[in-house]
Amino acid sequence: MHKNSAAIRFDEVTLGYGRRPAVHHLDGEIASGSLTAIVGPNGAGKSTLLKGIVGTLRPLEGRIDLTGAAGAPIAYLPQAAEIDRSFPLSVYDLVAMGLWSRAGLFGGIGAKNRTRVEQALASVGLIGFERRPISTLSGGQMQRALFARLLLQDSPVILLDEPFTAIDAKTTADLLDVVRRWHAESRTVVAVLHDLDTVKRVFPQTLLIAREPVAWGETQEVLSPENLLRARRMVEAYDPHAAPCERGAA
Ligand SMILES: Nc1ncnc2c1ncn2[C@@H]1O[C@H](COP(=O)(O)OP(=O)(O)OP(=O)(O)O)[C@@H](O)[C@H]1O
Image (tube, rainbow, N blue to C red; front, side, top):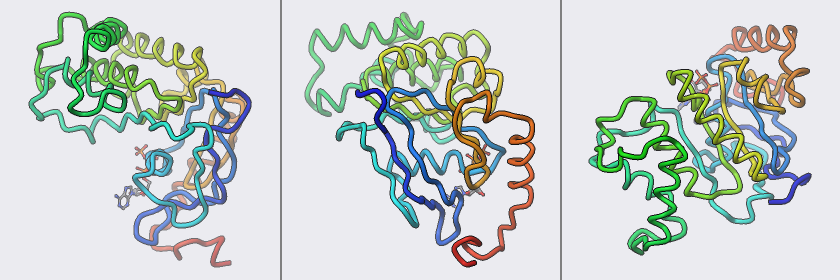
């Protein structure tokens, strides 16, 4: 994990569905070891951008280079609504899945890795929950389990999509400690967030988007009232029936 170099580089990226762009004209880079919030109104393209970085959505134009990850898989936490909790899995097994990239699916996990699973469970306050089916967890307990799984993935790049939405203050504070720990370990962390107080308190860098970048840089400067108003107006003014890309078509 090299500081001061780019972990993720965007080169005139357009991402979308069909031919319809959801995020366009994104150019720039996320520094290795940085802690970045992505903020913007509903429908601004924040989740789309994470899907582009993780590779589940291919850019319609431009390219995204994962220069800092050195081939290591990205750790990605999707929005809670996208996670199937009906799957019959214990908390222990869900968390141990974070080891798959190392141990292999059928590799068995051994005594050393069992200790690592227990340490991850302890880090998120879930000791005693090991045998609980995930379907019986509260929303906050499930999010703790998913953070424990991310801990075990041990990835240099971690993407979080609205990790604290509908999560209470205590759980949010505990999970923010995990985020701070990743940052102290020089991992690159990118999180989509709606709570601007949390962003201002914890995230030094912010990308404000409204289907295209509005501002990107130091959080205090990016989250100015003028920029936030501009972002809201840009999303409100968006015409879903407009030509696929106005700038490209101009
Ligand atoms: N699978 C899809 N197919 C078609 N359009 C989609 C799809 N997913 C998202 N979109 C559209 O792309 C745009 C950006 O959506 P996205 O979910 O990235 O926004 P967001 O900023 O994460 O919003 P929110 O804050 O509400 O979660 C929206 O207009 C949305 O309707």
